[in-house]
Length: 328
Image 1 (cartoon, rainbow, N blue to C red):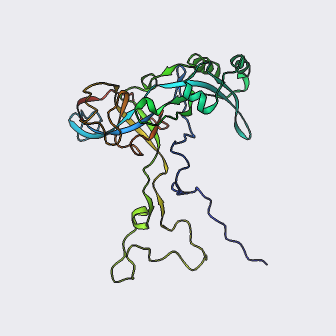
Image 2: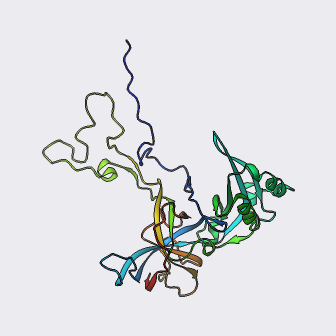
Image 3: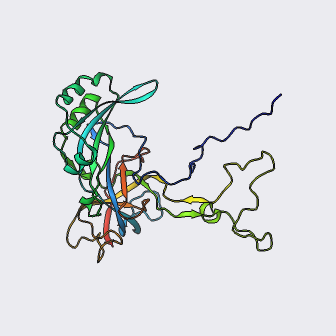
């Protein structure tokens, strides 16, 4: 009888594998929540600006600080209006989802059409409407230009945003009516609601097991090394298992954080309290629409941040926060 070959661990079986740098600085959203009511888009995007402190009244029930003043850290996201440049329909069979049609706006920003080569085809809208019988999901193609948020980058980001609510025909007519128009973040989300945040985390380069996995340092008399593991595993099987902490790339990974509460929304102007004196570090002053999220957000300043309707929404109705002061 031949020797039995050891089965290799399936890559991606852990939440942190494969631990390598993300291929692009744009996070990818693979799952979308369901929605009810009127058709609406389920995502928007912005650019991380910086952090502020918010003094508010704690409205969380069944907590020791309920009804008291609470000082918390929040993140400011610059959210310029997104342009609806197209609508995409997906069908589904035993092999998965397949893009059936793409309909682009007759007029779109010059930077988008020049960079991506998007052109509006004659009769595409009517042809797509005739094929709605086999369509299972409608997506809006949104374009966000970093230059509108004063980040200095000129190349636009074009990404898909799922449409929820209503049936497929209603979703298609909803997005078709917005082709070539700008959609602000206030038309998708509201203050007090929660969103999921998708972004690429801050890169930290090659790190050892102490910093990368939080392994314990060895005693100074145990071995000649201190910041290394004592053992890489047993004698059998004769390979290092994927569960053993090893040195390698840390940071620059895609991360999604759930249920970030929107503390404030608005349009920044001169003397807005969300802008510190001299502007945010490595970003400058926020001009235009912005969103303030409770807590931290992955990534560095000026990095693209995608906001998605929550996959695990908390129970209860969204309540607008009672903010007393914003300290930039």
